[in-house]
Length: 244
Ligand code: OKV
Ligand code: MN
Image (cartoon, rainbow, N blue to C red; front, side, top):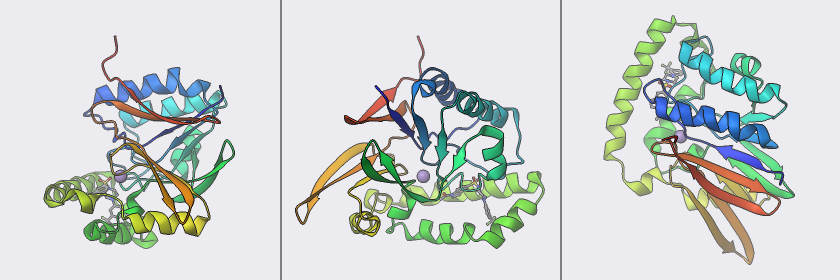
C-alpha cells in the first residue's frame, strides 16, 4: 500500500552509534519503499554549519543521497537543534528544506506539519533563546567564525541548556493547547503532525462539533519511532536498536 513516513528527534551524534545504525537500516530497508519521508526536525543533536564535514556527517548525508537518488523525495523541517541546516546540506543530499510550518496533502487530508517547538509557549526561556539564534544577522556572524570556535561556543551552549532543562516541569516542556488550536484554525485544517516534546501519542478531540487530530512523533532515545501514514490512516510504530 502506498505510504508516507515521518520521523523526528533522532538527535543523531557520533556518541550514539546504536541510533545511527537503526537510522541507516531504516533508510536502506524502509524509506526506499515509501512515497516520501518527512524529517520533522532534530535529526541531529547539534548543527553548527553545513561546512562541518566530519566522517559522521558524511555517513548521514550518504544515507539521504542513497534514498533521494532512488527517487524517494525527502523533506526536512528544522528542529531547535539543527536549525542551521542550510541549502548546501540540501544540495549534497537531495533533501528539500521546508518552511517551519507547512500544510501538506496527506492522501486527501490537509495536514499541518512542524517541529513543535513553536507550540511550547510556556517554555519562555527557550522562546527567548529561539528568537535570538533565529536572527539572520546573528546566524551569518556565527557561520563566519572558524569551525573550532563554533564547536567550542556550541558545546558551552549545550552544557548550559542541559542544566536549565533539569529544573523545568513537564507542563512547561509540553505544548500549549490554545496555541495548537490557534495554529490549526489559522491554517484552516484539523490535522497536525509534530515532534519535539518526545511524547508520542495520537491526540483526538472535538471543538465546536469539529473533530481534530494531533500526532506527536517519538524520539529515538531507546528505540526508533516512525509514523506510517496511508489513505487508511496513520500508525505510530517503534523500531528496535538491537538488530538480530
Ligand atoms: C542547538 C540548543 C545548542 C536549545 C549560535 C547563533 C550565537 C547559531 C548558534 C550554536 C549552538 C546551534 C547553532 C545547539 C540548540 C543549544 C543549546 C540550547 C534549547 C549563535 C546562531 F548565538 F552563538 F551567535 N548555534 N548550536 N539549545 O550546539 O547545535 O535548543 S547547537
Ligand atoms: Mn526539538
